[in-house]
Image (cartoon, rainbow, N blue to C red; front, side):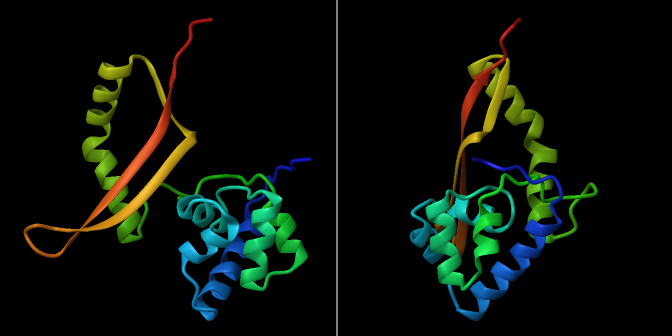
Length: 156
């Protein structure tokens, strides 16, 4: 039976422990995702406290990281989501995403509504992909794909 979590403190502490184990064991997020049998974005988010893992994935990841049974159980709880408390983020990478939405948020909204109508893009029925590609002008570029199911507003 699924269980929900209402105090994010335990999941935050587990995230710290998981990242410490990942670092000490020199593992990649992809290796953890491969063990879980799920996407790298989903497993990373789960280990950072944003998703619950299915039991088999929680056990596989915990084994690879050397986490105990309490951690396996906690990884399966439905978390209190949200990882940016208190307004504008200060981490430069997260801030740049905030800045992108400040600049392009209304543009994205206008284009989505023009193409789909009134509704939202789901963050539940969702896929995320991050790739590194060569920049033809030199260096590298980040290609980030946000792929969410469109959910139309329904009058009631």
